[in-house]
Image (tube, rainbow, N blue to C red):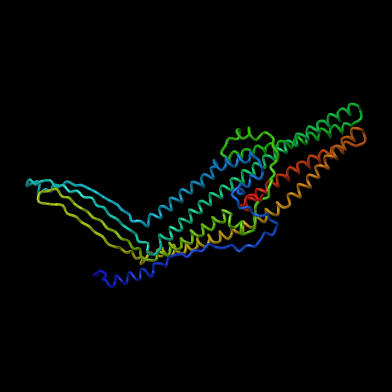
Length: 464
């Protein structure tokens, strides 16, 4: 026969409960990254002002500014990430609500007439009731306390996920715009070269008619024109594809963007250096690294939730029911009840242990994910510095090559026109000149691309 807890036993149970209350708590400490004091390659300093965060402003290109503003306002991937914040906020509110008493109410009415009462001419009995009740799950062992902390960490991660999405969209728009201007420049260079080659063809045809040039010279001049025309479709395709990508990233119509972007403009070139600093700056500011840390925190607090399942759950509940009976000889009566309840997890078929192991595994995975994000961040910056630091030297060399090729082309053409040179020299110099110009355009694109890549990798903006 079950016996109620006596006063002494109740006090002993309460003391044991309080002693166990902190057993499921998680003493989480954010991990620290063991990184070098500086990057292997020379790195520009870091500007921490809010204005510097808008790294694309270094290009001083109003069209790019407008595109990135449109992407931040309208991109659907970014909107999805922002919508996920609302979900995380709702989860926090839901978990916080578990700490508050839950209050319910029920009501009812009934009219009754028994067979005996009907036979004897008795009256119909009417009864009504309303029952307010409450229940309160006491968070003695920290299950909901850890759940609250986990939900808060997940909310932080949702905000940071939106930051990652925003940075990704901005870099994708900038890269697509850099490519679009590169293809536009390549089309212009090729068209100018084709026009020059057509003039050479006309000159060669005239000289052939006068007997001072051979049929082979005419065919070679025509071949040079055809070579230029054959390269145009690839550049035009690249331009259209870049335009389509910008339309997708900014949620706009390609036709509207074409009207704005078809007008020729210089290739983007950053006026300032990217803001990098030291490895610790990158680890501190990169949203993906910070998001990984918040995910690790949420997983760690999840272990606390799983541990709390091994301890009793205690709740307090109560209700009161006033019952009004409308019948001769009967009056209203009331019922009430209040008291604690304890649920002991004596046997769960191994579920609690399995849940604990699973939560511990998730925490380990999250910790490794954070460590991987740190390694990735440092590697991306190191690679970006290695490329960006050499871009200026490459452009200078390409500019010198263009200057030499231009002079060589002019001399070979003038020599051929006065009969002192061969047409093969004209052909070779024309090809070399266009190739040098294309190489310079490629180098300018690469420098702009490397600037974007490094700025995003360092998550630092620009250093003025």
